Length: 181
Image (spheres, rainbow, N blue to C red):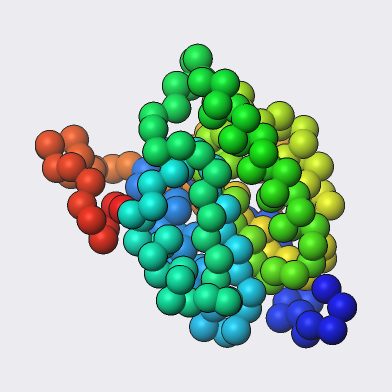
């Protein structure tokens, strides 16, 4: 974007994937760090629609440096038979993601759960790969979610796999406000 100092000379592509907890949380930590350095950060959350997530509330306090938006319903998405509305929301969200990434306005863009959106068939893999290939050089791009396709892994500069060893959910503990939401 003309007239705005870019914070990064070379933005990288990061992927946080795997079956363990912490992919979104890691991207939020990176976003907080970036905002601390006066970076412009945009987080677009696919397949999420709950307005009570802590990051939605916190982004209002950290505006204008941090924006978090959701492009999904507050409902379970079927992997085998996704609702047409989930497909439509993901595709509309991806068009927004494309504009955000290619605008050059943001130092860090997080596309939260985009790996899942591809894995569930809501988004075409090749379009996501093309977006990764065409990101501005100064933009750091983070893709989160289980099931990162090998094609995206190969395009990334950093890939972290979260692996579940033990999770309290398996012993009956439900999601807790401020920790999981």
